[in-house]
Length: 483
Image (tube, rainbow, N blue to C red; front, side):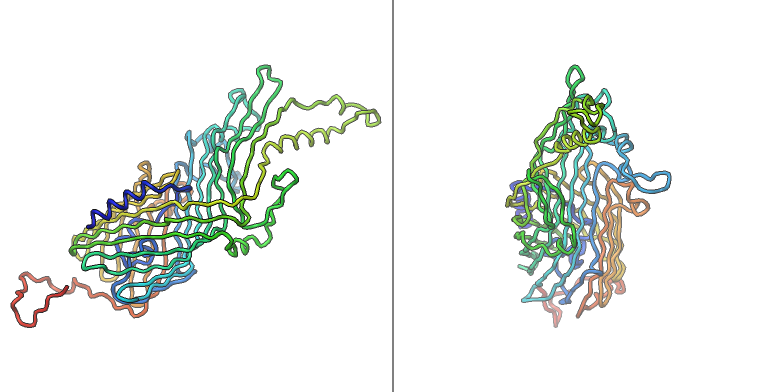
């Protein structure tokens, strides 16, 4: 039965398109189904000790993931005064043909899980931010030069990809055992978009005429955008300014873009050693209609230099033009090329579907070995495959992991977890080296938090008991078969 479920999950993920890849948490966390972060990502994960679990912002922690093919330190460097600055020449020297970066932040604001009708009911409220950027090496070269050198007389930036979304989710879930081996769970989520942007074919060009007398500047591209603050437009519908007063309050108060999503999950264990689990997450959409726009840029300007004939006249002469006004006029003409226009538009954003497949083998009461595959399906496909090992001492656990990101980046991480009578505390990362200098690492993540427990009974430390060497006879008196 487990294999049929795995096949169904693989089939579904091939049929669902998305828009922006969103990263996921450290794979080692899924070894323990009673970890509250693992429960956020798989609705079939729940406690088995009838404890009530809850946490809230400030103690619930966060999950942050950075993944790319360049280092942040390549872009932002320190000057002679040790002040940070954007350094395009340095970025160009270290860049590749295609340069991308993904960042994902999840903040659990409120989480609760309680026993309910032979299972567990759960609720959580999360704030989510996700961003993705792609820029080609030629575009970096263009930005690193104040003047266009001969090699770039005819220049095309190729597509510059910028995408991101900020949204909140209110989730209601329920999970329970279906039989002795299989647990299943479902979660219904109400989504509210707070900000979103997604560009398409966004590019810039510079073309010089054969005689070198005319330089044509051009821009091209479309996008969709929703901002939580009002946008003030010019007569031609280009952006004049943003009303950024109380922007944070407006962001968290934005509920005009509703959506809906479903999470499905299962876990399967046919004996004490082998454990399988899987989840299909964020199968849904957000409908943007509040302060949402279609964005278009499609303009060009032929620059022929400055005609100073009328500027060198005396002010009293006819047709006199002030040189400062002439420069301002040309600058305004150039600026218009890079001023996209906006048109109010409602649109539907399809959530990137995410999948989780996990297996672990319990070698002993102390040692567990695991393999976890997480994928996010969209135009910007993202995957993480993690091999983990966990050591268990009473209620304290340490784990190590080796993660492969998109088959092109390898990281070594670890973490720890403590489960006491009244609380669970954990922290996990997939790149221990990044703690020394995050900006000099292409890929790193961290997840951490504290969850409170009510009516929780500590598990007995089985290592205090000597293992039996014989077998229990079913014919002894007072024997009862447990199912």
